Length: 169
Image (cartoon, one colour):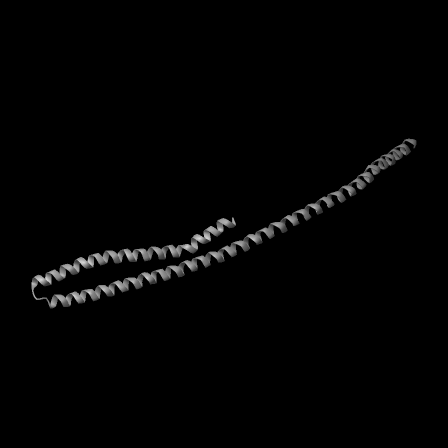
């Protein structure tokens, strides 16, 4: 019977020996878990702060884009208003020239109709054609200048807007 007691005692000793490291492991595990939890909480807090900062940056950029888009629409609107005024000015000048040409034509027609001879009628027509050619060249230059100024004026808001964007950047 003695051997049996020894075996039982040995088993108890082995069980106690195994139990001691497990208790130590549990105390180590708890401190490790606390440290790990603290590290995770710190990391989550850091990530949260970074996410908030990133979100604020995105919101600022979206706001800036909206403001710039509003500015761009304002620039386009101004440009179109100036262009419309320029087109109106060109059209008014063309109408003025057409009216003057029509008056000159009818005056010439009256002169030709009351001419004393064919030679005089031919001279009146020749003078009219020469005069109209010179007037037409002058009128085309005038209309071109008005159109050029209108185009410059129409693109001035765009140029200014681009210059402002470059200064802001």
